[in-house]
Length: 129
Image 1 (cartoon, one colour):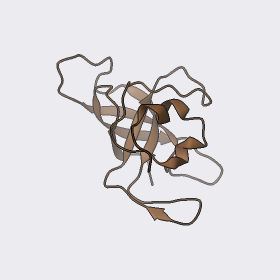
Image 2: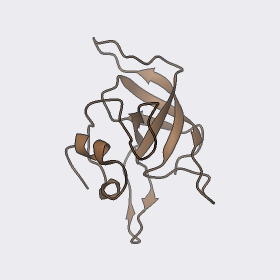
Image 3: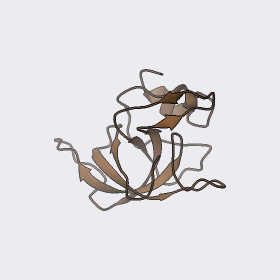
C-alpha cells in the first residue's frame, strides 16, 4: 500500500534513484495506492552516473506503481516484493497512452499489466511474474 510520504525506488534508467509520493490518484473508496496506481511524486535522490539526467532533485513527476511490499491479487492470492518500486512517466500523456521516461526497466513485472493500458511499460521489461 502506497500512502503519501512513502519512498519508492525507481526501476527505469531515467537517472533517478528514489522518489517520495505526494498524492495518490484516488478511485472511489481507495485512499492508498497499490500495484497499477498512478501517483505524483518528488525526486529525492539521483543515481551517480556519467550522463546527466534531465530531472533534478525536487522536481515533481508522475509515476506508475509497479511493485509493492504487500498486495492482494484479484484471484485471492497474496504476493510480495522486498521494495516498493515505480516507473517514471512522461508528463503530457493521457492514461490510455502511458509513455515511460526511461528506455529500460530492470526486474520483473506482474501479469496485471497485460490487461491494462500499460503495453509500452510491459514491452520494456524482460520478465513477467
